[in-house]
Figure 1 (cartoon, rainbow, N blue to C red):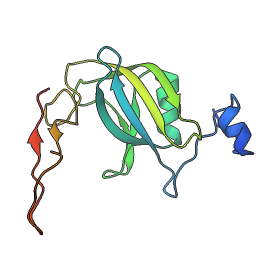
Figure 2 (cartoon, rainbow, N blue to C red; figure 1 turned 180 degrees about the horizontal axis):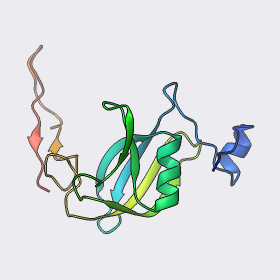
Figure 3 (cartoon, rainbow, N blue to C red; figure 1 turned 90 degrees about the horizontal axis):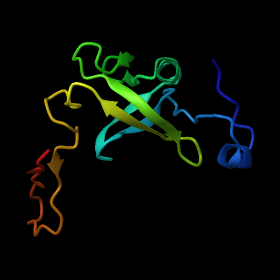
Length: 138
């Protein structure tokens, strides 16, 4: 499997060939949402191999920056993600997976979504004080 060359802005933005723009580490960000609820489950990274494995298997594969290795979501936890839709944005430098989350939980610390805390807005913070997170119900 190969990806198209990024030949022109018009081809990238309006063409039908997949020409992902990887960063200097060979990675591209991916946001993953739930096919049923539309809720954001996680944000991760993919390299070319993760994209290829996701396309080939229909299950989400990512690249772990901390482990520097390919990561098949659910291989150790049983929390597999079956891909229902796989998209790229207009300039092909960001990806979006819509998945059916198997096993019920996405986050490695046991939450339905990795986004389980809110950053409160309009806080009157004293200079130098630390912003406190608020728990968000799953």
